[in-house]
Image 1 (cartoon, one colour):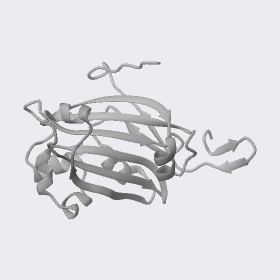
Image 2 (cartoon, rainbow, N blue to C red):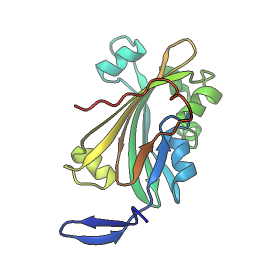
Image 3 (tube, rainbow, N blue to C red):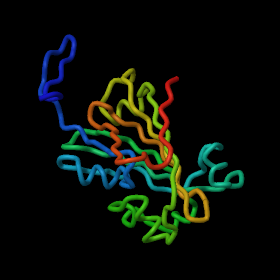
Image 4 (tube, rainbow, N blue to C red):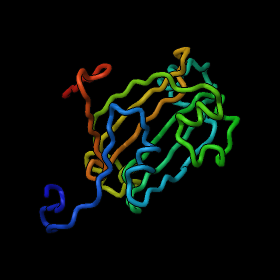
Length: 193
C-alpha cells in the first residue's frame, strides 16, 4: 500500500494524512472538490470586499484606473489541516452580494445562481513556487517549502471575465490528477521551466 507512510529526514516516519485528489479535467471546482472529497472539510472565508485589483487583474476585467472588483480569499481545510489558500478577484457586480451570500457557495454557483452569469469556459495554469511567509503561515508550511500554484480565469458566455483566481496548494495534502477515455478533451499541456 503506497502513500501510507511519510518519511522526513531528521524527523522520522509518520502515518500519512489523507490527500484530496482533484481531477483537473472535471468541471468540479475547488470548493466542491474539497467539500466532496476531504475528510471533515471546511472552507473559511478570509476576505470578501470591493478593492482595487493589481493592474494585471484590472486589465483582465477591463477596469478603468481606480475602479474596483471584488476580492475573495478563502482557506480550504481537510480534517482541520489547511490544504489550499485561494485568492480570487470577482467581477464588480459581485459587490451587490454579502458575506452570507457567498459563504456557502462555490464561485461558479455564485455566478450562475446569484449573478445570472453562468461560467461557460476557463483557462488554467499550474506551476510551483516557494510558499513565502504569508502563504506558508496560512498553509502551516515552511516559507521555503514548494507549493503548487493554480491560476484560473473564468469567462461567461459572452467571453467576459467573471473571475480570476490564484490558489496556493500544499502538495502533500492536495494533488491534481486527470483521467480521460478516448481522446483527451480540450488542450492539455505540461511545461517545465
